[in-house]
Length: 90
Image 1: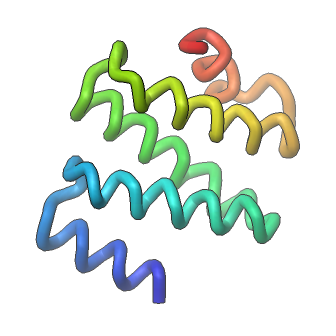
Image 2: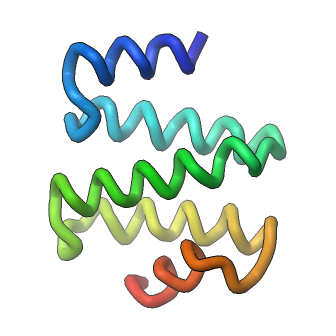
């Protein structure tokens, strides 16, 4: 259900719209909390990339999203490319 809602939101608002980015991040967080890291990882990566592209690297929201992603990957595995990017930005 969440996936379908995200798909519709992306279609209507576009993938870089703030509401779409929030929904994408929320779905990734849900997967993370469920331990479905294989689904959470690409969504977090996409959310971070789109947010950075849409809002710029210096945006306040990007570091907070990076922090959430970093917490996820501390649980999964150390040394991933995404984890290194998050540490660098933080």
